[in-house]
Length: 228
Picture 1: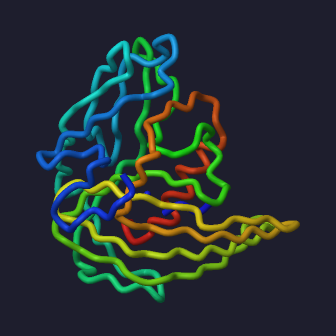
Picture 2: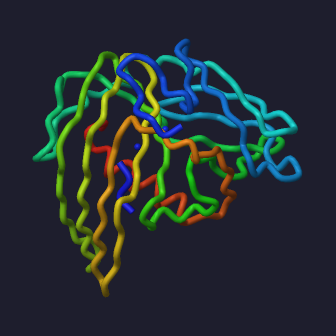
Picture 3: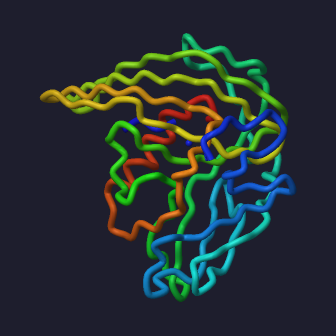
């Protein structure tokens, strides 16, 4: 699916993290990996343009660490690339998590997603996943962008609906799949990006190899084109 990259079902206000956000007001991210069966992970690292943070994992799957503020050379203008979407300040500088990777005895074992599904397949209506983005100022994105592209004979039509506010500092928001369908070589989907964080989202481990997780990383880069 075309996920754009970063969450009790209530809207997060412009300056107070939602009660189910993994980020505290002082820049600490914490959570519990609910499927850390038999201690399959002992540490995690968050990577953006360089290392953003890392943490050991407790025997019960808990982690907590401070997220580093990106250096200036890691920040990029948010831009205003999608027709139909209004960006309040296109000069805002942003950076995003490129991946949250899990390790066992120093060897990468998989990825972590904060998601409301027990599988890593994101091609299903109702699935929500969290993304994490840094912004150097408050910026709002509002509107709908429709894109169509053909890759290797396969056509993708994506409707991306934005009702999103990024605050100064690290932000957590969700992408929710509204609809998804495949007919022959044509894929059609609709996704919404917002500050609404569902209480059903949990931190989950997905081990390698996992083509679906890797595909999600690629689609995240495509759909969060505003943050590139």
